[in-house]
Image (cartoon, rainbow, N blue to C red; front, side, top):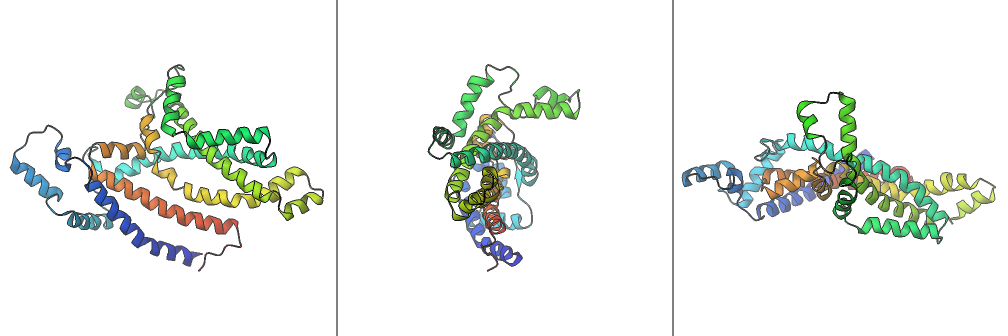
Length: 328
């Protein structure tokens, strides 16, 4: 297993290198002048200062030269500085990524807690009205964009239920002057602000997970070993949960292996809709403000997570199914 992981990581290096080239080139090709964004729109400076600043930022070099210099800094651990937030990019990512993780981990756990029993029940009652209802419900959750569902919740719930906030992560006044009730009041404040975005994410993740559970269970539930377990007189719950679901969870575990890294990459559009200060919103803001250092770093960060997610998925698959060997 260790040899396999090392081998996969080594083979991922050229893939990641190509991805960084593409990301860097796309970011450089974005509309707008990087120097103007750095100085600030409407800022009046002499041409001499502009040229000095351009040279300082390395913008006087060709794009390939800029890439080489950027890669050299990246390998030394320097991700650059965000000129909009006035902080090192590494510090920005390290701060906001945990806000995204908090939102996504809660939604994932709730989605799984609902999807597993519903998916199993669908498979057991395949073709019934209940199965058809949850099938339509899950397809709706997969099809409806999260930002659209989020805006509907803001309009119908947030605007009519005064105690549910529609944006942000904390009450702005309390965040500025402190929480009189201490840490418990702060936790409660964050929890209330999470209600709407968590509902949207849970709805989406429940739809995906329940489809995987149902389809996997349908394939497994009529296998010979399941019929043998029934023939032995075992209780139906034991047959379903101990024998059938144990083997049906393999595709689900594979999905989770790929999904776990996305816990850190943020829900880009949804975070912008609810003004949630996560890494996804930071990425959108950096693109709008032409903060190239922050944009590039966020995209590379997401690419690294995707590569690790694929590796984690393979490892999880081999752990769940001993027949799969990954030591080659």
